[in-house]
Length: 485
Image (tube, rainbow, N blue to C red; front, side):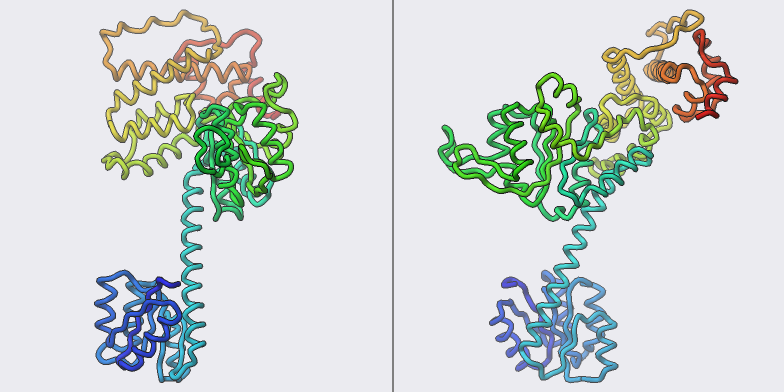
C-alpha cells in the first residue's frame, strides 16, 4: 500500500492540498491535476495509478465524461467520485458508468480511507482471479485430449484434487505424467502455493537426500549455510517425486516417515520439522515388480497407491494425435516465427500411423522440428527411422502371409519420398497385422480398434495378399462375436 499512487482530479487547489496531506499520512503517494484533460495526459504518459479520486464539477471535460474515458482506457483502475452533488440520480449514473464508490463533500476522513481500502482490495482480488483463471486455462490447454480414457482420467484428477491423498501416476516415458500432476495441483485449493518437482533418477542418492530434506550449516563438508529442502519449499503446496521407483531404500524410509507423520529432519539437524505438502509420485516402472523383487518398500507402495492413475500410451489413443499435433502447432509456430499453418496431409497421415514409442514428447518434438525445418521428405524419413528403431527394439507379432512378400525395389531406383511412402505402408501393414493378432483375427473388432470400416480392412488384406491363419473367425463369426459384445 505504501507505494500505491493516487491520482486526485479536482480544480480546487485547497482540496488537492488537503487530500495530498491526508493520503500521504495514510502511506499513499499522491499526484494532483486540476482538469480532465490533464488527467488524460497523465494517464497516457505514465504508469496507471492505483486509484483515481474524481470531482464531477470540472472545467472543460466534465467529471462524468472523464469517468467514461478512463474506464475505456484503464478499466482496472478504480475511480472514487468526490462531489458536492448529492442527487440520487447523479450517484446512480456515476456508479452505472463504473465508479467504485461515491462520496459527498464534505466527507469524513474515515469514509475516504475505507472507500480507498475497499476499492484497492477489490482490484487486487480481481487481478488474483484473472491470474488464477489464466493459469487454469493454461493447464486445461496443456491437457489436450478427446480420448474417452483420457477424459475419464481428467475427471478423476478433478475429483481428487482437493483431497490430501497421495496420487501415484503411472505410464510410459513421455505420456504426460507431469502435465497431469500439474493439473491436479492447479485444480486444488493449494494452487496458489508452490508446485515443486524433483527427478529421483537424475541425482545421486546422497545429493537427492539433501535436495529433498535440506541440510543445516556444517552438516557436511561444503555446507557453509543452511539450505531448505524441496519438502520445505512445497509446504502448503504440492511436490512431484518423478521416477520414484529409482529412490534408494534409505530415502524410501524417510519418505514413508513424511507421509505417515508429516515431518522430517534436515541433514545434520536435531529437531524434526513439520510439513504440509501434497505428495504426487510418478514412474514408468512397474512398482509391483519392484516390491516383489525387494527394491521398493511394500509399506511405502501402499502409502503412495491411494489414488492410482495410469496414463495410456499414445499408440492406444490415436484419436488424440491430430488434436495434439494442432495444439503443438499453435504453441510453437509463434515462438519459432514459422510460416507453417498446418502439416501436409502426407505427414499427418504418417503421424497417425506411427506408434510413437516416445509418446506425446516425441510427437511434440516432431512438430517442433518440422516448424523449424519444414522439409516434408526429411520429416517423413525421421518418422520412419523412428518406426524402424522401435520395430527393432520391440518385435511385433505378425501373421504369416500366404504368399512370399515382394522384394522392395532397389534403393537407387527410389526417391526419398518413395522410400518414406513405402516405409509408411510397411508400418501400416505391421500395425494392422498386430491388431488382428491381438483380436485373434476378429476382423470386425480389429477394424473398430483401428477406426476404419470393415470393408476397408478387407480391401487392405486383399491388397497385401494376406490370408488369415487357420482356426480364426470367419466374417460371419466376426459379426456374431461383435454382436455378442
